[in-house]
Image (cartoon, rainbow, N blue to C red):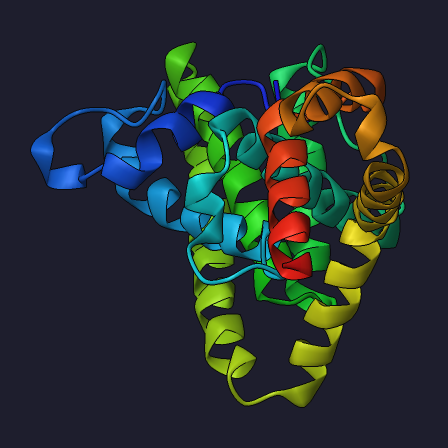
Length: 238
C-alpha cells in the first residue's frame, strides 16, 4: 500500500477514481464502504493539495494516480509519525491486534487534541482513523468500530476549528511552507541534477524520450514525471 500504516484503504484506486467520484451517484470510492466515501473523498482531495502545494491549483490531477498516492502516503506517514513522536509511542504495524491498535489510536488522538498540530496533520490522523474504522467494519468488529468512531467525531470537530484558523494564522502558513520545503527537498535536488545532466548530454541520446526512459529507470522515477520536467525545462529555454 502507498501508506505503510493503512490496513484497508487502497490509495492508488482512490486517486484513480477521485476526480470523477460523486457520492450521490451511489458508487463506492475504491474499497471504502459507501457511508464513509463522502468524508474521505474530501479528506483525500485536501491532502492531494498539500502534497502538491508547490504546483498550480489542481495540479495533482495531471499526475498518475500511483504518483499522487505515493506523495499523499508520504504526507500521512510523516504527520502520523510526528504525532506519535510527541505521544512517545510507536505506530502500530499491520499485524497488531485490533485492541492494541485502538489503544494506540486513542493515545494519538488525545495528543493530537492537546498538541500544536495543524489542519493537515489532523486531516492525516482522520484518514488513518477512518482506515482503521473501514478495516474493523470489513471484519464485522462492530463494537471496536464504535470505539474508533468516537475518536473520529472528536478529530472532525478539531479539524474544523483548525480549518477556520488556517486562513487567519500566519504561523500556520509558515508551518505549511516549511513542511513543504522539507518534503520536496530531496525530489527537487534530483530534479535539478537530472535537468543539468540533460543540458550537458542531450546529444548522446536518440531523443528526449530516450533520455527520460533511461534516467527514470535508473533513478526509480515515473517516466511521465521526468518527461514533463524536461519538456517544461526545454520550453523555458526557448
